[in-house]
Length: 117
Length: 116
Image (cartoon, rainbow over all chains, first blue to last red; front, side, top):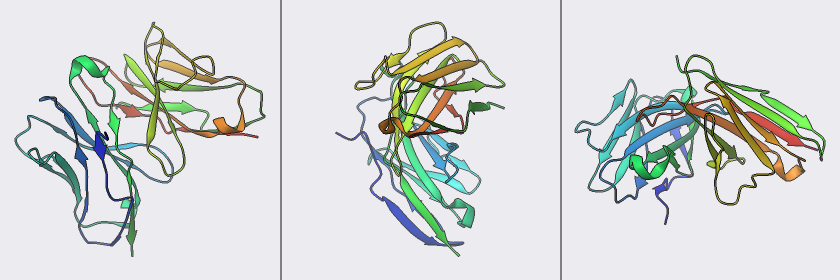
């Protein structure tokens, strides 16, 4: 079974609009963390935001916020006031409990976001 | 801080030759380095995890003799694609974590390999 599911292969959004990228996860661990990374066409992976399973508040980093709904096992990324430079692939990733994972991340398939002027 | 470099950024080689890709953590000591492969429009596929001074742990389906990983120091890991073939053409990305109980990985800019 997929541990990280990103259901939107691609999205078109008008510049300056807010956009929500979906991510659902599957884990039986109580302690886990969720990451979002951005990958522009140049290829580098850019860390955006992190949410720990025990964090009570949703993580925010500038225009990025993570809508963490633990009961639904979703960790959607919200980008406010989108900009042309936000056009990129976006990946959701999860780390599970320390003991079993060798610190690896589990990756979603990604969502290609295109911002239209 | 937490900068990871990769060299080369792109390489074209002939079928049958070997190619070495370097991954360096420039401003921190990387306890663990990860090597990923990424096909166009796809997600990252973890190839192997390497800890400094020990043998790399390869993911299922990744040929150890084909993709040689050496993590000789806390700032350098190398991936050598031996006897490369066109199907090895891909984007290879490394990442590094500095240790402790941190999960955050810092990524290199990637290396695009084309085998002709």
